[in-house]
Image (cartoon, rainbow, N blue to C red; front, top):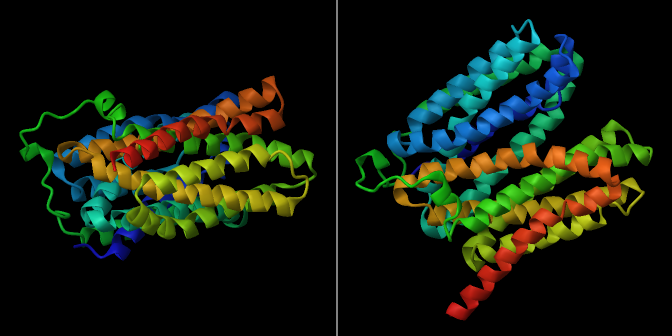
Length: 385
């Protein structure tokens, strides 16, 4: 059995590097002379490559176990972070972003699978609460730290800090055992690997997959259009940062509690309640004109996210086929990445075609659709009793 703090720390380190870059990568691209189109490519290429790489990485985990892919992913991430500092042209940066997305596609499936294997089925919700807290804390540190470091010490300070931190995570990962739990890699299994489409539409996996996609489509929409709304209220970039930091902070705090709830009450109930909270929060988001009320709504969004995430992680862990667990978890991370990449342009398009307030309300449509799946699941489980 693996001590949870090591996996928590490795997961945190494995995700913080990409989040450190989010506040600065567009500015760094501009400093290299990138055009507006090239800046969009720089920002988007990571998500595009990482979405596919997560699925491929999940299959590698199935065949070779968690430790090898994890070590390879952390090494590749570290190389990418140091390479950012020597980019001379926008195309160098685009290539580095693509490589970074490829390496990162090994980290998510490996850490999620390792966390699953290290916990008993009765404590899987709590384990996934810790896993989700590590990812949320990585976003909180990254969003807050990347911009501050770049402003005070220059872009290279972010790249060097991220690279050194990843090397620390790599050495920590070397102390992990080769095997987690009792499940052997599927290379030794007689089961035929299932296709991505088969997993995506599996009756037991549809709800968690749809939930993570809806959750991060909503987040992508908010990130894209809420700053414009807040600017119209006379608020500054600092207030936007505080809003996003509040979501992330509450998201971190609710993960472990929500994990306990999913172990005690089942996975569907906390996730369904969380989706309902997210829907209500984004519907009322256009109403307040005072910043304290906006922060209160941000806290509600964080609570909703915190209830959903560990529950749906545990659902994937519970129902993923033994021989395709890595691929199932890679697909989960692919949908997470794709959600933000899809949500941001959708939010921008809706706000351009309609108005910002209407666009914010419509961001609740994705979780509302998924909520019906959760309610149907709860009703079926009660009828089965």
